[in-house]
Structures are given as structure tokens and as C-alpha cells.
Image 1: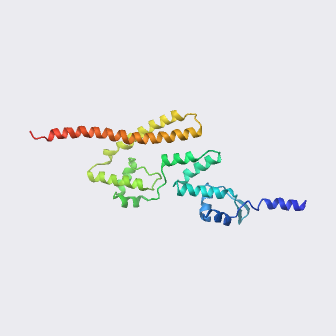
Image 2: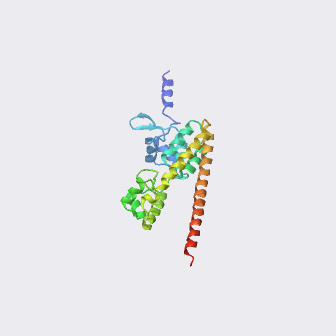
Image 3: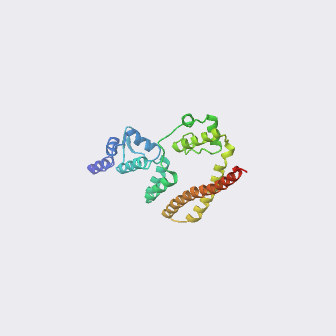
Length: 241
């Protein structure tokens, strides 16, 4: 009986559980990164046998590789990765969810600038930057952090100012965008209401692609038609009498 108790106690600690060193060797990921994943909730906490010794289930090897793939290949944010891991834990097929995240939210940008760096990169003053944020002409994914898309729009804003435009002249863009997006969300809700998880993903993915096609096409063609009318008027007015 005594030997059976020892054997039972030993099975709780011995493999398949892994020590941190074994986990880092199996995944190629540093201890600091693994601990960070645990602290932000991407990985479960280890089993502690005493204050200094922790053991990890071998399933974490595949989980860590999966997280690194989402970060490096798909450049996803930690919040996106959390949602995908939660879905996978519930037995969902996540390949479509990964695709939807890429299409809807895009890949996380490697460029990360604070306000001072943004102003240097775009030529905008801090006052102009704050005004653009207030009018939602700049909409960073994370407050106070600017990526390459934000910088590109910031450079366009600088050209607007140089041309003599002010915030009020271009503030209609976010106002109209909100109306369009609100309607798009109503359409999505109508089509996805009480549908299965995979159907919701497929419909959302397709609607996003459709919406982006229509936004660019209709606005540009409408602009072209109005510009053509203005050009015609200009031609008439500039003809010599």
C-alpha cells in the first residue's frame, strides 16, 4: 500500500508535465515571453508544487506555437488572439475566424508611434493632431499609439492644411462614415440573427468584402460625375466671347 501511494504522488509531478526549461526548448520561445502570455491570460497558470517549482501541461507546446503563428504570420493583436483561443477551447473551427479577423481588422502594424513621433513624421503640430483626433479624422486602433495607416492619413491632413482647409471643411467624412457603418451593421444583424457561429463568420466576412467594394466604387464614381459637371461649367465660363 505504501509503494502505491508513492507511485500515485509521483504521477502528478512526472511527465507528461513539463518544466519551464523544457517548455522553452520545445517551443523556441523565451521564458519571459511565456510568462507574459500567462500574465495576459493567453495561457493557463502552471501547477506549482512549491514556491520555486512550476509544471506545465505538454499541450502548451502546441498552444505557444499557435500563438506565435498568429503573431508572426497573421500579425494579430493579443486581444484578437485571446478571442481565437477562446473559440478554439469551445471546439470551434478557427480558420474562418482567423480569416475574418484579417479581413475585418487587418494585421497589426509593426509601426507604433506616440504623439510626438507622429507629429515629427507627418509635420502636424500637436494642436493640429489633437484637433484631428477630436473630429475623428484620425482614428488610431489604440489610444495614443499610431501605425502606418494613421501616419499616411496624417500626411494627407498636412496637405489639407497647406491647401487652406480647416477641420470643419473635412469633418463630414467621419459623420458620413458613421451613418454608412451604422446601416451596414443593421444589415449584418438582419442576416446573421440566430444563425450558427460558422454562418455568422462567413456572412460577416462576405459583407465586409462587399462593403469595401461599394464604398470605394460608389463614392469615387459619384465624385467623378460631379467633377465632370463642374469641369463642363468651367469650360463654358472660360471660353472667349
